[in-house]
Length: 125
Image 1 (spheres, rainbow, N blue to C red):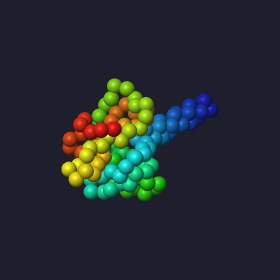
Image 2: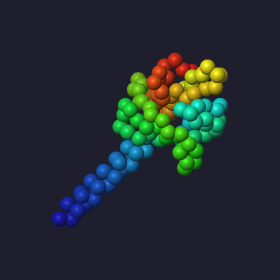
Image 3: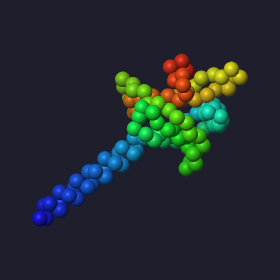
Image 4: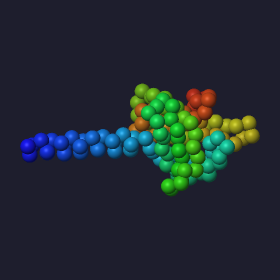
């Protein structure tokens, strides 16, 4: 009986650890060197955290400054062959010269987060 209780406790602990790990994998941080548009929202240069909701490939991306969500946009997770070695913001230049965020590459992740219809394939890092 005692062994059964220990096994139940261990199983519960493993399940809790897996849930925490899964949640932690849906977030990251990024630093923008310049002001960027996300939808109709302008994000000033600086440090941000990101979190996405959904199991992919289509997700909802939240960009946060501190604990405040400053931009939300639909995004798509696109597999990569290897994990990225550093964080990178992929941008596109708009007709007025401003720049828009087209995607994110986050350290250790094996996917690109693409924003917008065109994706990030023709953007710059």
